[in-house]
Image: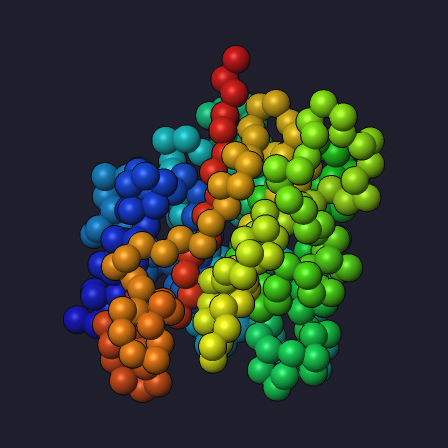
Length: 287
């Protein structure tokens, strides 16, 4: 009954995204196995033409990453799992890379991340997230060296914020204000090929995860330059948002305003998640 309640709750949030049309590409974290995603889709989202792309991670706790995609718009070309080497026998989630063909014309590389947590302290655990950033950066370099105009979307729970070293110095995802870009007088070299869509929202004091009395922007979406400046598929400026439908917001008590979770400690609450999802919109030029 609890599992069914969880899948029903999550499907309500998913269905409400994208103006009640549901997302076309969705990255998910902390999934036990693919069967549960497939079951949720079959039972509660059967009208959405969704399929899943999934690989089991070496993390023994059953908290994998996965992808749900609209099969009417996207064809799955390949699914790869990239292992983050922590050293010392430490295992963490795979970085999942799905490559998709959009309407049989454009390839999109879609990366779902869940980087190591801050357990033990932010500074003490930072090296683990830097290892994840280095792993992902190496993959991005390989793609960009082959085609500098690649369409890349990177997202997930990074357990760091947009200005932390793992994101800015090692992944090299640049904070920026989208509305400050002058598309007619663009610099030839931004100094990076990745841009963090969540920066402005974080700068405005918002976040996806509430820790004590503060909201942290742990969940982010990062894109390649082509999706910012290209002509075929383009990010809708400032469309990034922390998605907070009323149904998943805690209404009263000391956690008012935070996501309504499934559990409070060991007590079953029947909620949704301890993180708010984050979303972004892209426009397609079919001319």
